[in-house]
Image 1 (cartoon, helix red, strand yellow):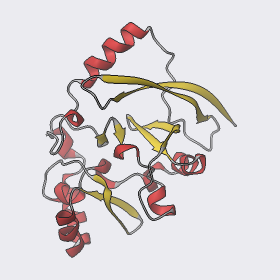
Image 2 (cartoon, rainbow, N blue to C red):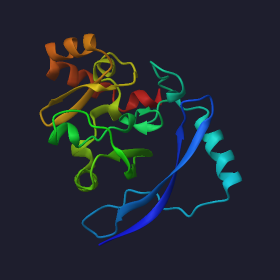
Image 3 (cartoon, rainbow, N blue to C red):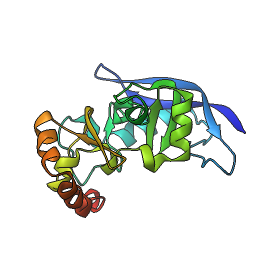
Image 4 (cartoon, rainbow, N blue to C red):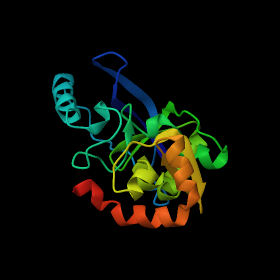
Length: 197
């Protein structure tokens, strides 16, 4: 059984400012089989919302490209204000390629907005988010193995042992492929404590 609710979301615009858009009819699962992943707090006054959103966005690392400061990194890599740049994490497994998600198929998980190309993909993720979410929050797996927090590129990816890994460059991907189990072990030593250093 589900319900629908309008979800207001901030996303950085292509210009210097921010643009505000609304995601309408976001599906939420309310049964015991599906965990509630959306933050359904009631909407607040637009002026207060604008102030809170702008003040909350100021310190986030995704305003600057490249390496994120480990001190300011969030648990999920945000590209353009969206988890893994708005790509559907389930599509890597079902379609074998990155697929851009759609605003009408959105949900919050681990403090980030995730988009999905279909309702079916969103339903799969809702039931098993850790199965489909990229390891290390979508940060570059090779950089994580080196003890660095660098944004992963949704177009440079690999599925190994049933888990999705994003990398930041073709060069990092080549190095990663040379010893995946070894680099996974090294990255696991740094994750997630590296976010708190």
